[in-house]
Image (cartoon, each protein chain N blue to C red):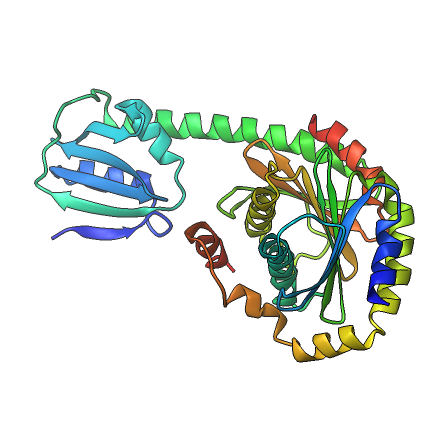
Length: 215
Length: 144
């Protein structure tokens, strides 16, 4: 019988540790937003992994970065090929080291961007959101109890509106709501949400934001 | 008289046109925009959906702006009425805002507008639950 769960509840290092220590012959399948990853276990080691387009150790390192995703472990499934020779504990240590390092780089990059944006008068807080609606990083909130607007949905509506007018998606969307003004800007493949004082004037602040994000 | 107040807005240099829609996205009047009624309804619906996201959180949206390099859209929402203005550049915003404020306050006193606003009064969040949604929209709405 297959063991089914979510990486939110049991992290990948624990699953690897468990299968290796138990000397299981097994296949671990991970599914995250339609993308699949596979890790095979045999003789107390991780012997093969795939996570498109990665194969072998690199696939394991990438999978270690997933904080959530459905998983399934099927016993007695042998690997189609052996691509990993590294001991499982060394593999995990290296993976965690790489993950820490990449997270530091990402955090520093966004920290500098946020810092630049916060120097603009009237900007109260900044957050970065993915296209699938996940908040990637943020500065301290002015009102921690207040939930961010669904930035990805807003920008999707803006994109569809643009399509109606045969235009590219807009560079910025501004929304006046209650005591704040929200500004959403495209930033690479993500969206920046800027919470601002309601008195901020769009035509004044836009060139400053463009300068800060390097557009 | 509705025409008069809309033309006050379209007379601002750089304004391409303006239209009024109800809280359900039905187009009441269009001035100078050479866009099909179906497309105007689509624009209105997108703006109303964005507004509805905030209504769900007990926040009221009064204005939504969309910026492109060569186009600027300003949507004003007031008393179940949506006033959408398309113009070439946000540089005319200060003058445009004053004109829209004056025109909108007069438009909201027009009997035809009052009647439509009353007839089309609805739960503002209905646009997030009813109507055609594509799969990508439904996925993001599931995160609400």
